[in-house]
Every structure is written in structure tokens, then in C-alpha cells.
Length: 113
Length: 112
Image (cartoon, rainbow over all chains, first blue to last red; front, top):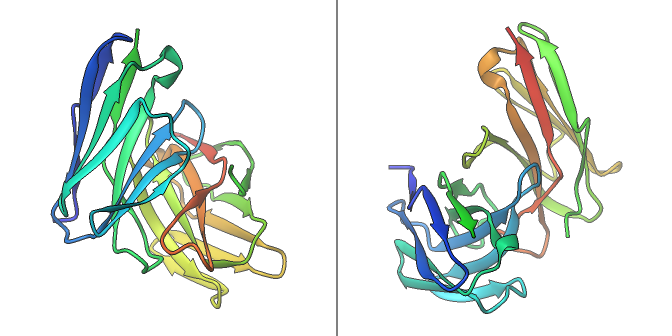
């Protein structure tokens, strides 16, 4: 199984809502990533978890809160977002410290109203 | 910040033609990877070339790497309409573990 799944596919939320994005992989990868991608731009790294510990936070605002409950799951909790946070949020996984390819999920299209 | 630059930003060709995309980067790397992204979807890994390799093939894909010029090219031969997508190069620095730094991407359109 070389699939990374993400739910939901689409999410519309108001600026006062709290929601969560979910990501799951069953490839035994011990590194998981959150990226944010705006239209016609490359993905921007937000967070990296390695062996279920947060190893990189790219100075992301605290309204984004990541969580890695176990080696297969990655969540991104959203609270008090701004309209400019509307984007495609991509999850990826890989073997840590192997410098190899990352496997991406299909993304969650987030719209903040 | 993105260290990679790709050119062209957009490329439109006819089915059956070859497509060449270029990528430049600024720092020493462990490897360089190419990804494809269909509109609004996730990225798919295409090919990885290590810093000690000069050329690599995978099916209709040919990647070259010139570390002295800090540049790479992706050639897609005999293109198909299904190759229409955005293509991104991504580098892994020598000291950054598995962290990818993406280029700005090339939007390829293959007309049937």
C-alpha cells in the first residue's frame, strides 16, 4: 500500500470555527509532513514529524496546531483562521533521514470565509 | 523560501513532441527529485537523481544533473495529453535530512 489518504477533500470554515484535517499512511514511514500550497505556487513546508516528534516548525502561526497521535496518523487542528489561509493542504510521508522520495496525499482544499 | 527556479514557467506542445524543463538551484545537494502535480491534486514522485549521478532514465523520462552548474533538466519524450500537469523539481540539501526545497514549477500543456 503506497497511499497517503487525507480527509476531508474539501472544507469550508468560518473564521471562528475549529476544524481538523486528517492524514493517514500505512507504509511504515516514520516521517510525516504538512505543506500549504497556494494556486500556481510550489508547496511550502509547514511542519515535519519524525518518529512522532515535531522536528520542524517553519514559523507557522499558532492558529495551526499539528498532532501526531501515532506513526500512521497526522492531524492539523485549525482555529481562528484568516481568509488568506485558504489553500490546498498537503500531507506527505517518507522514511526519515533517508533523503528519498516523499509520498503525497491528494490534499484538502480549505476555504476560509 | 524557494531556492529553485524552473524554466520555462509554462510550456505548450503538441502530442508526440518532446518536452524539456529546466531547474536551477543554489546550494550543494544530496539529491534532486522531480514531481508531477495534476490540477488541484497531490504530487507524484517521478524520479530521483543523486549528486554523484549525471543522467537517469525512467520510461519516457530522462533527467540530467550538472552539479557544477547547479542545474537539472527533465525531458519527457513522445508526450501525451495525459502528461498535462505542473512539474516541480525539489532538492534535498546535504545536511537537511529528508527536507525538500521546491522550485517554482513548470506548467506543461500537451495538446491532442
